[in-house]
Length: 137
Image 1 (cartoon, rainbow, N blue to C red):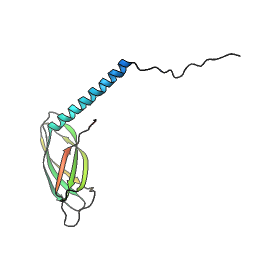
Image 2: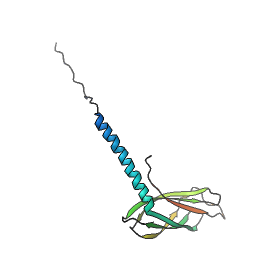
Image 3: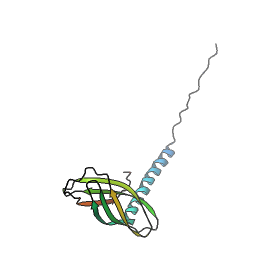
Image 4: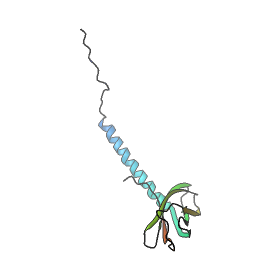
């Protein structure tokens, strides 16, 4: 009777240490570059003149101004939050906006999905808009 020896399948090779070290260094450099670009973005985009112009029980209209001081057209993500007089959050909205390089643009955002409807006679107190940046660490 013949005897067959099977080959080890799949063959397991260990990854060399230099490859592991270089991948780790590239990951750290990538995280550092991403954090630097997010810091630069927050310095180049200015949001001002935030005011609530109209509201009803189910929507809030917010006007604001964005200034892009960089030399590139950008698409940025903004986080809008509206609060009542007690400081309770009425609603929030995450959305993207395209800005033109070196220009100041008036903008309008209508929040039509609130966490709770406004009570009779209640009005929104303030709205905040912040630049939504990605964080790795």
